[in-house]
Every structure is written in structure tokens, then in C-alpha cells.
Amino acid sequence: MSFSFLSQLHCPKCHETYNPDVIQQLCTCGSPLLVDYDLASLKTQLKPADLVGRPSNLWRYHELLPVKSPEHVVSLGEGMTPLLPMSRLGKDMGIEHLWMKDEGIIPTGSFKARGAAVGVSKAKELGVEELAMPTNGNAGAAWSLYAARAGIRASIVMPVGAPLITRNECAVSGANLNLVNGLISDAGKIVGHAVKAFDLFDASTLKEPYRIEGKKTMGLEIAEQLDWKLPDVILYPTGGGVGLIGIYKALRELAELGWIEDKLPRLVAVQAAGCAPIVKAWEEGKTDSEFWADSTTVAFGINVPKALGDFLVLEAIYKTDGCAIAIEDDELLEEQKKIASMEGAFVCPEGAATFSAARKLRASGWIKDGETVVALNTGSGIKYPETVKVEVPILDPQDTLQRG
Ligand SMILES: *Cc1c(COP(=O)(O)O)cnc(C)c1O
Ligand SMILES: [Zn+2]
Image 1 (tube, rainbow, N blue to C red):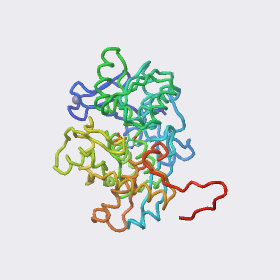
Image 2: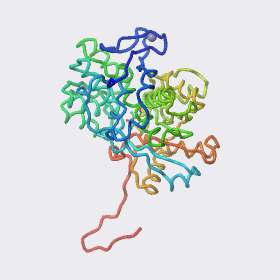
Image 3: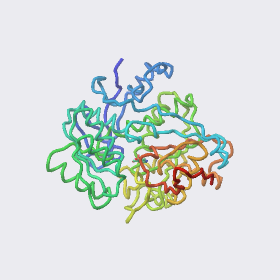
Image 4: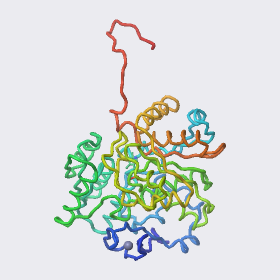
């Protein structure tokens, strides 16, 4: 049986198809490309039970991933992260069945590792020697480190305001790191010019088709971890929206394989109030978003003023009867503390926003009594030490313990 059932690439806008055996970036019409698999044939050859006993990482789904040959797999053991019950926090917000898909323990400290593992592996298979990308930090860190493992050179451009640790991750991996006085969109312009001038592989969000495939595995894992019975609601912190597009794609593929029922969970795009272009578009019933000027939020991973895949994010929300919701920074920081003190999980600000959103949607009745809800924590709180303000007593050796 083939390692991958990859068949072709297609454009979701103009429906043109492309050969996946050579390097492809965007469609000639400017849209991102999506990956197709021969699901009809896979359906007759693979059953959920065949996955039992496979390695506990995302490559257990290799038939539904684009890498054709196992020797091109570049892995740091990413995937199969825990799906944790959040009973105390759930009780606190009136959601009896609240779960956290916890990406905080994945290599590189954020779920960007999934996109990087699959994207870099496929780039290696296609013979890429040098890549370039703009980033808000976590993606650059992950792609730098996986590129180093693959022996691919990487040029990374990130805003000066991006979390410091992500700079260090890029630098220590030997990537060519440049900072920009501006936003990720400014970094994108610089990369765009460099790609043309130096003939580099453009690994920008959605400008290559395979990052979605890596992030898609979150959806595959949630389904498998819940024994192929889907939750009612999945909440996702949305920047470029790749994870949400990926989860939606994964669930549709599983439905086509007949492994899950056709009715999909309601997908919720959670954004920061300081950068909420998808929320605005959804509230106005539009199918794509407008550039969000002067965007700002402590949840750096979701500070994306205009996403190339916005129309795919909105389609996933509309098709699943989902919604989009914006959270203020002080609300998500408050939630971050609650999650740590009630559940012992130090989540990233982006992840905290999904729980804050669940709390609001339950209060408004959008999440109904008894529903099963999965919130994505996309990274480790340890990567954002500056979001927690610490005020503690400092003792001299002869002092006695203060107990608050
Ligand atoms: C990049 C990032 C996001 C947003 O991911 P998209 O798939 O681009 O929407 C969310 N959380 C964290 C921690 C991130 O690094
Ligand atoms: Zn097209």
C-alpha cells in the first residue's frame, strides 16, 4: 500500500488543478492551493483499527499526508498531544464536557511544529534547498528548527515586537534572521521581494500547500481521541486561520472515508479584539475580510490583520453553523490565570482566548447545556513569560514564610 494517497492539488477559487510532484506556490489566480487524496481508494484499504499500535505522532496518519516516501519525513516526534478533561474550569463556566487539546508540549513549544514538520518534509522531498518566510514568531521558530534538521537553509523575517524566545529559537538553529520595524504584513513584503530576487522557496502562510496538511492532524487526532465521535463545538484561536481550515479539511476527509458521521462540529474562530478581521467579516455576513489597521494584542500568534485564506476560514464557519468572536486582552489574561490555578495548565494567551470565548458563548446560550466542547491551546505559556505580572514577597534568610 502507498505511504501517501496524495493525488493532486486544486484551487478552491478557480478550480484549476496542479501537479504535486513539482514545487507549487499559489494558483495563478492568487488563491492558496489545497491538497487532494485518493480517498475512494483509501476507503477500501484502511480502517480506523489499522491505526492502533502505530507511533504516537502525527505520521500515524501518513496516508492522509502529502509526503510520498518515508525517508523524507523530518520529525521531532510532533503530534498526538493530550486531549485533557477540564472539569473544574468547565464547571466554573457551566460546560460539563470541556476538553483542552494541549499543544503546549509539542516540539518548539507551539503547534506550528505540525505545519513545519509536514511542510519542511515535503519541501525536502521536492528538492528545496533554501526557504524564506515572514512570521509573528512561533512559525519562524518551528520552520527554522525543522529546516535545520532537514539540512535546508532558512531566511526568517519577524516584527521586532515578536516574543523574544522565538528570535532565539531561529538564531540558535542557524537561520538567517532579520527583524522588521513593523507588522507581519511588513515582514511579508520583504520576504516577497527576496523570494523573487534570490529565487527562494516561499514558505509564507498558505503560499505553499502543505502547512495546512500538518495542522490538519489536530482534527484527525481529536476525532481518534474521542473514538471517532465528534464534539459539538471546537474553538480555535485564529490568525492566518490555517489550523481552522486544516481541522475542517481533516473532518471532511474523515467523513468521506466514512470514519465519522457527516454532521461536523460547529467551528468557532476566536480572535483578539485588537485584531478581529474575521469576526467583523462574519458579523457582516461577508465571505472575505478587510485589512485590520493598527492591529494590536498580547496574543501575538493571532495578530494577523489580513489572512490570505480568510475566505476558507469563513467558509468553514458558515458550513458548520459556527461563529466568530473577539476577546479583549484583559479578559484572556484573566482566563489564563484561571486555567493555571484551576487546572494546572499554563497555556499561551492565544489558547486562553479560546476558553474565554467558550465562557462567553456558554453565557449567551450559543453553547447549549450538555454539549461537548474542545478548546485548542496552541502553545505553551512558558513561551510568553512577559504576559504574567509577578508580585511576590522577597524574604531575607531569617524571615518567616508569608502566607498571603
Ligand atoms: C500562529 C498561532 C496561532 C494562529 O494560527 P493560525 O493557524 O495561523 O490561525 C494561534 N496560536 C499560536 C500560539 C500561534 O503561534
Ligand atoms: Zn485559482
